[in-house]
Length: 89
Image 1: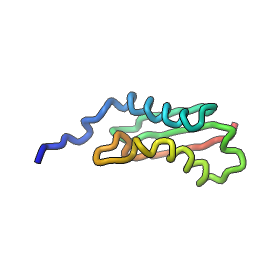
Image 2: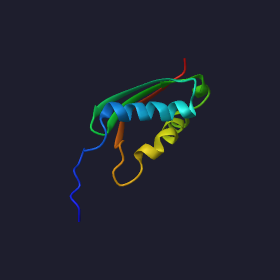
Image 3: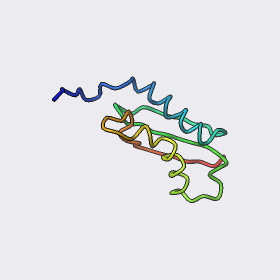
């Protein structure tokens, strides 16, 4: 069995940009702020009029749906979203 080195993934800034791009693909008019907090951990703030009238769970489902592929697999680049804030402008 090959030795797997934990936390040997891409730099957190690169992953943050992947997160931002994925969310922008789903919510193109959003203002998106992604902050690395440690290996594989991020805080995300998304501001978009698309959240208007949606409850908090539905808002967060939109964002998580956009980054699902970054959280999937045996060694995903995103291990956790420590904080997700969805705002209506």
